Image (cartoon, rainbow, N blue to C red):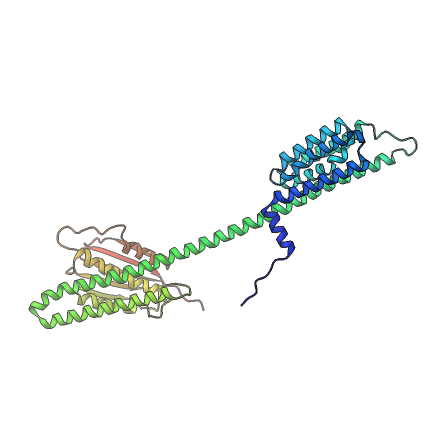
Length: 409
């Protein structure tokens, strides 16, 4: 049993601050008001101006509550109060100096980019304007310019610190937002990859189910129809037909079980991920014999030197022939002579399935059928192509072209 890691006080404080920014900002406003009140009562503000200073302190610190929620309007409100207090009675400086600096920092850190320049100008005017207006920077006969220059340097340093801290906080926020956006994009990309893999696997399963079920049922139906006539004339032939039906059914059942075993596997799913051997070009003679036993007059011709194919390419060739023969039975009839040809060359395997046509009009195979789409998808996965259409000599033809990839030494 693993122990749940407890968060420290700092982590809890940061989390609470992110969830409730106005609560902590309100506490900060109260602290600033108490400091301003203390400075006012200690004598930093003349006695006749203390009431005005307390009012200014309240008005200047109230916008601090909204310094992160609405930084620019809140900073503008504090600036207006500070300007009114400064140029009305300069003795109230202690009541708003800290809120003004805090709001200047907040406007730079949490406001738009243009707020930095505006804050710099407002703070410069607010800090140096009253001193210039009062003649503070006039040379002192005893100390010269040392005193005014030290005060000006200190005020300039304070202004630069406020702007620098605000810019640093703004950069940290932007960096954190970029990290969050990057994490979101990575997560979205991962979800898209999973979705693409699921769609590809769904398409593969659809092709397998279609090829197995459609071909097996078509063969069984054809043999059953032929068995009805054979039962009346040749009982022994009917027994052979029934045996073929049973064999086809058991083979289809084994294929379906193998596919279900793949689906139950927790590992990656692909066309080779099954314990049951996948049919390939070596199984085509048995397929042709099975279809011929069902009543379709079909022959197989092989030219060139056969070569070993990987499981995916071999399965593609087998499924294309299987689907083409099924379509011949469905659309041309089980009495239509059909020819299957495998042409091997050094760099390509061409598989052709052609029927000789039927007497009279022939139904046009559906263009958007799952079988045609499945054949083309299978071929495309292995760099091949499928051509389907009428043959010049009559009938209908399906031609598969698969490149033969030489294994790297």
